[in-house]
Image 1 (cartoon, rainbow, N blue to C red):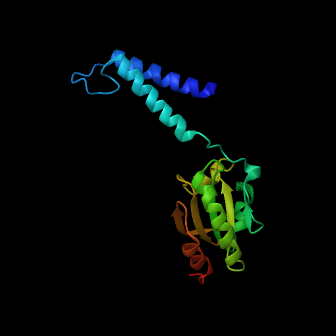
Image 2 (cartoon, rainbow, N blue to C red):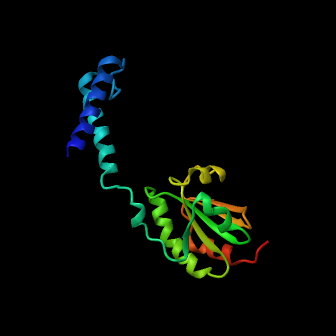
Image 3 (tube, rainbow, N blue to C red):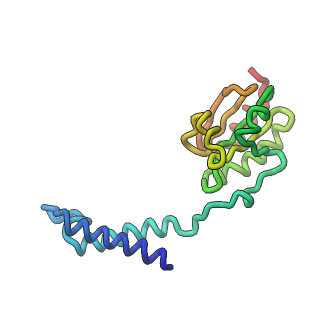
Length: 172
């Protein structure tokens, strides 16, 4: 509750300062017309951001459910894990909402493609060098590798319908 009061109070103060230091000639600018309007709209904007983030907490790494079919790898074990195989690598983070949506899909895909391909997961927060090596800028990012070489890349949540045929197809 104290955090909420501080956030909204900061928004009110920032809006008031904008209204005081800036001037809007038409009077129609909500933040800069006058200090009172600046305070009002600063408070409203900060309240909206507060409510939008309410209840969103990062998932602790030990709470993330990986099946036995998904193998978590690190920079140290990565090259050995992808050598000579068809592998789908999921670059993700515990705090990423779309990554959490992708995880159960990957669990299902892993069951369907057993024997054809492996699915590996890389936590980008713990393996920044590996994410940089594959130029991962957005998560989730799925990278299909054949014998360690990138064949295809997907950004965002991908469906079972898209992944299963890709992973069960004969290697090019």
